Image (cartoon, rainbow, N blue to C red):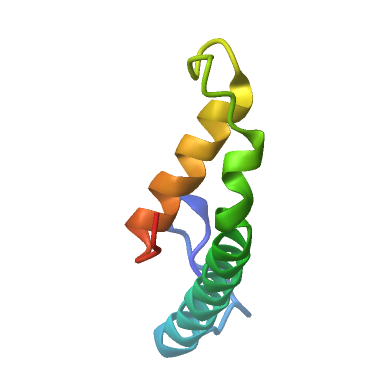
Length: 81
């Protein structure tokens, strides 16, 4: 394993291939987490209008900003927002 500063220490015999496999496994886990969260956002999307105050701006009513951000995230990840 390479330490900070690029030093290699004796006994750190982790191959580049093993490091790559570990990194790819972590990416797979993160992608699964993202997919799960997007799925949850899709489930609540039909109910977002219940928290919007149409008489207020996003600056005046923080839930309006949250709804905006959720809809933007869904649009980014192929949602129906």
